[in-house]
Image 1 (cartoon, one colour):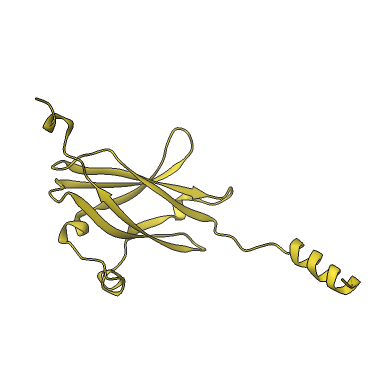
Image 2 (cartoon, rainbow, N blue to C red):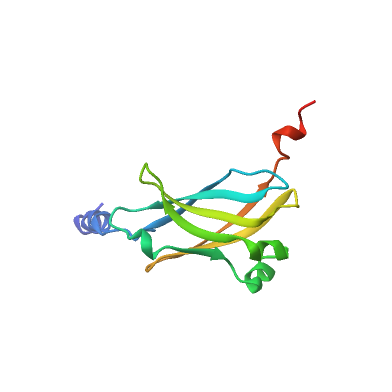
Length: 135
């Protein structure tokens, strides 16, 4: 390998790589079927990012159609907010006032900050409440 080729390889490794300053983690359910929705999604941010700039919501109904996702009117009743937990982690909190009657939810989330917009599709299976299984 020539000296010029080696120099190009080394210099390309030293150039900063553009990376996402934001990441969407998994969803954790805190409610069951026939209860108001209570769930959270972990967000991963690089140090120095401002959590106040984070906006989370469902994608538009047009994006649902483009991605062949079924639109259910219940999805429009989900409220999204961000919260920093005591351990310093940032979460999107999903809540509804009405009970979830369907055994699963399928939706696409849009999360954006000043630099990035990310999308992630979620399918959540809601278990019946524990007392349903008690004899």
